[in-house]
Amino acid sequence: MNAIRTTPPRPLDVAAVFPQLAPLARTATRLHPRPGAPSLHDSSIGGPLLWPADEPWPHCDAPHQGGGYSLIEVRAERRARARRAMYPDGAPDVPHYTPEEEAALAEIDWDAELPDGPVPMLPLAQFYVRDIPLLRPPGQADLLQVLWCPFDHEPMNMPRTALFWRSAAAVTDVLTSPPEWPVVEFEEYVPVPCVLAPEQVTEYPNSLELSEELREQLKDWSRWQAADAGVDSSYAPYPESYYHSHLSVAPGWKVGGWPQWGYTDPVPRLCPACDTEMDALLTIATFEWDGGNRSWIPEEDRAAASSRDDRYRDLCQPTAVQIASGHKQQLYICPAAPEHPHMELMQ
Ligand SMILES: [Zn+2]
Ligand SMILES: [Zn+2]
Image (tube, rainbow, N blue to C red; front, side, top):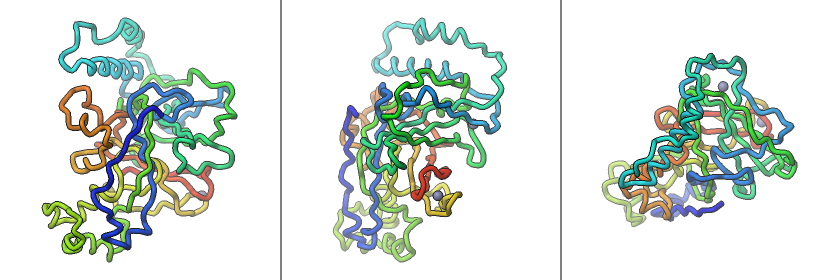
């Protein structure tokens, strides 16, 4: 962890205005990914995994339709773009790619048939419990590793994910060069290596998960006024949207907390193995914030987020991951047995 990110205090204590919300408070860990060079021993998104050399690398054996982008090209383009962004006033007269990148790109055989067989998965994230104490690992495990297959899969048309819990101390020989598939379906399925700055925040449920009575209260502008909470009167016709944008569910990549809904209504999340109600584990987000929820922008990023400087163009999409047209991929896990199959939803 080499950075701190601080979510500004919520504009008002919503549980004081609507006491029925108080027992529904839930802690989430915002991950605050930022491009960097994470090591094997860091919690990361898109970074190297502490993977044992003697354990098979996970592969996806579902059907795949060809490919879209060369992994080598995606990474070279990312690096070129990062170099360019360092010169907001115009890049000096240097080639787009380095000689090494040119050489690697020249090696690509664009007409080659893709190899047959299962697709090696890509590292998506790893989380050490010391950084994210919210995680509830099984047994002695203290590390969660998430991989995904960078192709759309049925039924939701998202990358398919796989979860692995392990004890970091048990990994002595590390796999240094995991197998890779030469192509990915979309460049947005190749995460930019990011370091994390985990931060715990308090969330309340999306209004679609609240009782009818509580939803009616949130729509009642007079209650907001009576609380003298200083909510902008432009919200008077739809005060519940103020709750939605600023007081309920945090945007961006996070562990735990309340799920966001809206793409669909809430659906039951029951463990396929034991029928237990599943917990929200990880939200894989396209955006860290958008125009409607800027109150969640960390203090440390607020100046940059308001800047037109090109260097900060990707600030709200640091991982470059995009789910569909800007959605989220949610992973749910069985609290009774983390090794039971997990569940994925798009929101
Ligand atoms: Zn696959
Ligand atoms: Zn279960």
